[in-house]
View (cartoon, rainbow, N blue to C red):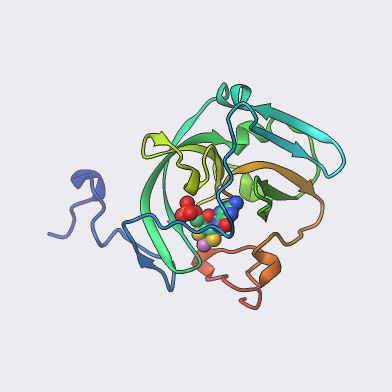
Length: 200
Ligand SMILES: Nc1nc2c(c(=O)[nH]1)N[C@H]1C(S)=C(S)[C@@H](COP(=O)(O)O)O[C@H]1N2
Ligand SMILES: [Mo]
C-alpha cells in the first residue's frame, strides 16, 4: 500500500527519482569535450598537486594505482540539462590523495591534459565528495570520457569533473577555470541551478 521501500524492491522507483531543476533524464552517455581527445600513454601519465610554485605531491600511474580504490555509484548532471542516474565508477578518493598534502589553501584549479581547467573549493574535493576515476561500468575509462583518469565531483555540474585530469594547483583565492571564465557559474550547484555567472 505505497510503503514498499527502495531497500525491499532493490530498485529505484520513479518516486525515488529526484532531478535537479531544469534537468531531464538520459540513459545514454553523451560526450561533451571542448577540444580534441588527448591520448596519454600510461607510462607518461602523472598527477601533480602543486601550489603554483612548488610541487607538493606527484604520482605516476603505478603509484596512483597502488592507492586504495572505491566503487562509486552516483547521479551526474550536465549544465546542458541531461542527467544520468546511478552511474558506476571506480576511483581513488581525493581524501586519500589530499591526506598526503599539507596546505592552508582553500581552492583548487584542476588541470587537464589538453589544457582544460576548472576551479573548485577544496572542501568540495574532501569528505567523500570527489574521486579520480579510472573505470566506468567495470571497464577502463574510454578516452572520450576522460581516460586514463578523470575527476568525478558528482554534487556539482559535470563540467567540474575534468576529463584527462593531470593535477591540481592549490590556491588561496578562487579563480575561474575554462568554462567559468566564459560565463558559467563559479561554483555550479545543480540543485540551486547555478548555471551561469549571474545565477544567484
Ligand atoms: N578536459 C575536459 N574535461 C571536461 C570537459 C572538457 O571539455 N574537457 N567537458 C566537461 C563537461 S561540460 C561535461 S558535461 C563532462 C562530460 O563528460 P563526458 O563527455 O564523459 O559525458 O566533462 C567535463 N569535463
Ligand atoms: Mo557539460
